[in-house]
Length: 237
Ligand code: DC
Image (cartoon, rainbow, N blue to C red; front, side):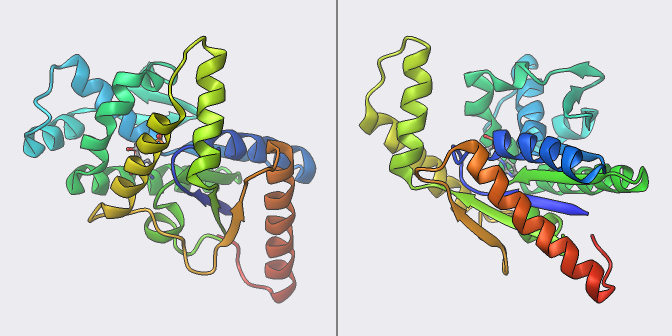
């Protein structure tokens, strides 16, 4: 079974996807793997930063991605065999990752890689929870369970402000809200793999909900989808 979770930045997709995979593994006795597809675009950006990439040259960004060996194994992101799971979270990587994500050739490579990873997981009789922007629309449009997880820009800005305050920072709410709106616009405007709500997706607006509540709702939805697929004899993908 493949569960896709798409949605805008700051909607809590990573935390929810990770916890959902763990929760469903415990509840069903099947093993659910978690795939963070944003980390793959981030890995290209990290590689480019290390190589002093000229980001204004899309051909060079493509060649860079072609020369990188990226993989995600057991929730860890690997770049040329090095575990870069933490390294790709640095703010300068976040800033440059759009040059990878906006590049159609890089996207093609990452989509092929995401499908290969999914095949490997399913072949090992495991299930997959994958999250990103285009998972239920472009990469796995036939996934059994497609989720669109969102929250209002104000709610996402409020959460981000809270995280930054915990790090001792004193950012302005309006500035964070503007950054979130800019990222939403960029994600939606991308010519290849833009952020869209997948057709027939289960839509959840997480304003005012705890992570546990979100995970429980999504898990209940996926279990009912899985039960009805089994009852009708349709295969699960
Ligand atoms: O979700 P994130 O912040 O880790 O994503 C990093 C970048 O990759 C961001 O620019 C959005 C982009 N992305 C994408 O275009 N498609 C995906 N499936 C996942 C992320």
